[in-house]
Image 1 (tube, rainbow, N blue to C red):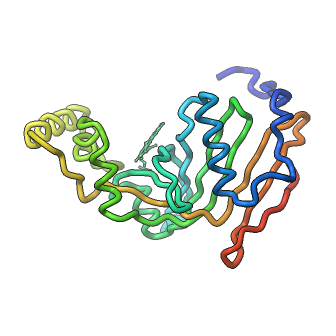
Image 2: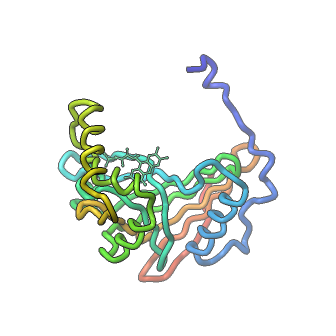
Image 3: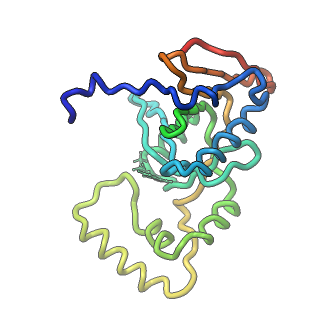
Length: 215
Ligand SMILES: Cc1cc2nc3c(=O)[nH]c(=O)nc-3n(C[C@H](O)[C@H](O)[C@H](O)COP(=O)(O)O)c2cc1C
């Protein structure tokens, strides 16, 4: 690690003109879509990767990992995963989750809080069928988050599954999507001298309320 990590500093000059203004969308879903589209068109690396935070209810321990946003439907952010993974167990017991997008090239982050629930089996089937065969077999092969004795164990399993599925691969019952229905957004735009823009949207009685907070 750099010895001078304390001196790493980016004064966020470049994007001052892109700052949030009072005309910022009143609908945070639309605002999210607008920033997400900009992140994609300005070729940010992995623009759809976000940190998903869940809580293990028994230990009261939060944990985060990166997943991919695959759809934004009916105001819900959809990602796909193993339904028996650690994150899935966390969600089952405590469906309140955090989602964090960071696009360094645009000096932007979006913090989201919401409620995660499984999407329908039909929706998961449709997405699974759109995936490359190797990813489909990979979903069958991985007991995500469980102990693995060696890399070879996984590779042997993959080989056996490749033989088993000669034609179409059906979706494993333990794999599918979750939709996160947001109840809070915070849009953060880096500005000079640490005087960044922060705009929060809270859903109160079904209606979005927005306000600025200090950087
Ligand atoms: C760029 C990137 C994208 C990822 N996308 C996914 C994803 O969409 N779904 C998923 O289950 N894991 C994804 N992972 C792996 C997760 O970060 C994590 O290792 C895995 O889901 C197991 O997490 P868990 O044990 O907390 O359940 C991704 C990792 C990276 C670095």
